Length: 371
Length: 129
Image 1 (cartoon, chains in turn cyan, red):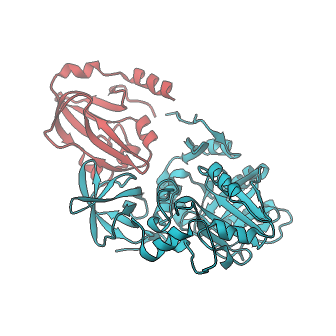
Image 2: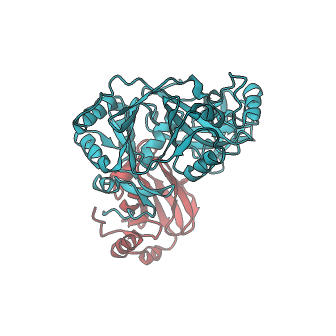
Image 3: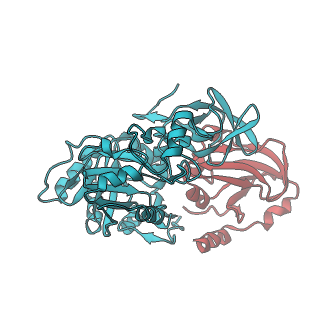
């Protein structure tokens, strides 16, 4: 049967034709045409857990913050504290409004104390940039460089594949990526290489000129790296207990209410960051909600929006859910009004199905983190 | 994949096969399984349940989404595929064969004749694309 749904509206990344060539089934993803899978979402998931897969993440937004006040300004903008970064290190953080609600989650990379690269979500791009501009002060520039593309290579064999490809493509590489520590980044030529990702596996995210991204994709493909789509990206991140903005994080809840108290850093009494008053209170005393993982014990699949019950009473909601290919059972993240241990029910098609409360993540090194 | 010529179809992508004893077996089309992706869970109907035409009686879930399966005609459920509990992926690998979902004994055997033929179904999915 011929593919029938490759015509999605939206912007094309520089890898659009590469996705079609690889049999990608394209869907609209926050205004971009991206592959949901290339045949089997489960096979792509397993390739990343056992070998190496690659994702087109060119839709993500790169923001460069430079200037003598860059560090001081980011310390006011973000819930986590960039002062604990040394050059070349990365930090996961939320960017919150005055009420402590999450505007976005992001990774900030420190190249120096006057030069940071911030990578934010695509769905929140305009809102994030407007927020940064509105709250801009001191000697800084905020630049959203055009003409870039981004590939994430993830999996136990990712570093070796990515390094081989980059060495092959850059005729005069200023270094390899084998010495790059986890949660660190560096430039190799004008390619930005970060040992970060959204799968729970080792790997790199490579930001490079869009004119070269097709060649990098092809080089990785020739080397045996499996293309992986948005579907696998979602099951991988969920198994790894990583949040999806819009599902697990939103402006109505603080990071603490979404299980991310660790990205709220109040250690420096003098750091006056946006939302601090609420966030410090939630961190000390808890918010209106708590956040945890659940594993379905009965049969079915967890989906966002399903109701969580305890003894027949509604106590919360599933924010993200799926069937875990690694565990062969349904897993989900839930936001609940009070802490629960042990068991709960999740209502699926009007029927309460038994579920077990577990800590995040669900999977580490391909294995369940719970028994 | 060629659509088997002995099947009838619904606009909601179920296929229907007439059996020798007058019962009809239902599954989802190759097109439908392709749209859903890897199937991970199937909820088959209750045995002996009466159902109307276009009534949701089963649910198939892929990693991506859940989808209702409708009874194509009025009748009684007389069989469900027991293999789908442990191997829902049969619907992906053999949608018109081992991936069958349930069997109905129609109240009115003529209802089968009113369903869409394979050529019309093929044309419909091509127009959808």
